[in-house]
Image 1 (cartoon, one colour):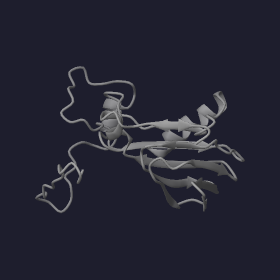
Image 2: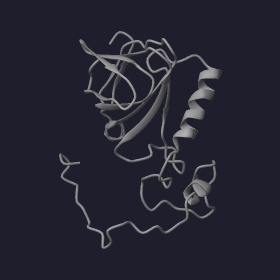
Image 3: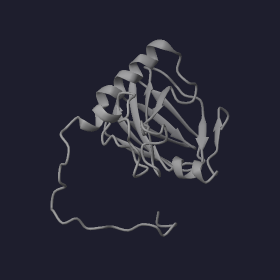
Length: 180
């Protein structure tokens, strides 16, 4: 955003954000493959404010039972805006992936710089020529166009986020699967 010179802040009047709807309201309106009949998006961000981990984990578990893992990602899902099918935020892509116990991904690289957060499990990630050991709560970064591969010692879940939505909208995003 700084490079686009389009960032700004608007200070709020209260120390704490005002709650305008009860807990669960957004999920009831937008997270069950339904939309209010006359809903028109006012902004491009998702109307769902949080994506409970238990639901994400259930989806990963179902995928792992029903299909083989992707060679470069394991079982990886993208968080979406349920009203549009686009990314949940217009400038930041968020993802969650499950790596089965002992699974090693093939090399992969893409133009988006990606931050990974280890949610569950232990393993290691090779970024270029460097190897990083990880366990829950560790954070590591894969810079743009750097080859990356993961190896899970036990079943592992990685959350990640990147600038992929911006790159896709500008026609800049590219990936290379396999022999990166």
